[in-house]
Image 1 (tube, one colour):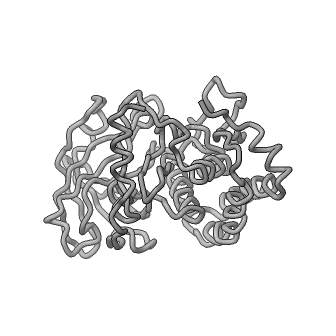
Image 2 (cartoon, rainbow, N blue to C red):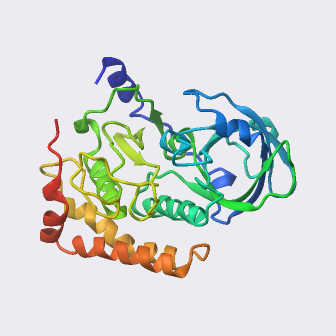
Length: 338
């Protein structure tokens, strides 16, 4: 780790007190929105650092906000896999006062990867729920808000069907809420695992195992936000579309891994000698009733999908039923810290 990054981590260990939740993420009720933009140009923009394009966001109550919109991400911007990229919404604060977007700035927006194909909206809903599951197991989690959005092409403002999507709290929003700071890890750099809070890092690894996701790295900050909060350096996960619990048709584990399906689980956490892993597992066992209630009550997903996902999670809960089972199924595959 560079001296600069060490200094930054040290400088944010004494963080401000947590702030109140802003209106956008104060409710789990789905929003009804319209988004008007040159989506053709956005889809064709494959530059490494795209610029914001002007867009209009019609919010509940009929107010229209001028916003910036750009494609984001990597894999889902590849037209071989997705015809519609994930988006970043740049909200102008002064125009958002008095609306659900008051106090917001830059937000990630997860949309159907191929809106023209049946089943892809379901993937959005599945991924959305995984953010909610993480929030049931951790006190440091990115908040999400479900929405039905009509994506209207500016050059053809005819009726557009509303589709399921969801907004993700900004890194800075999470940091301000919990009292900390999001740490920007330079490209090609990482965080030595010894610097990561042992309990938080292990909890993340157990969660990723639970949902069947191997597309992450806490030390490499890949699909993981590094947050300095209080006296902890905490990894916070995001982007779960490769998880077995989502079952995206394009999802596959990396070739170097000893599994061949995204539905197969593989524990990728660090070996933490001296850590009482039973404390980590207890948090998941305690959260199980809330997780099951979340899925059973989430009617936008078909009942069969909800039941199948809960059955997938039930296998995980069987694996962590005892310390011996958890050792055989999870922790024996831990990665030695370098």
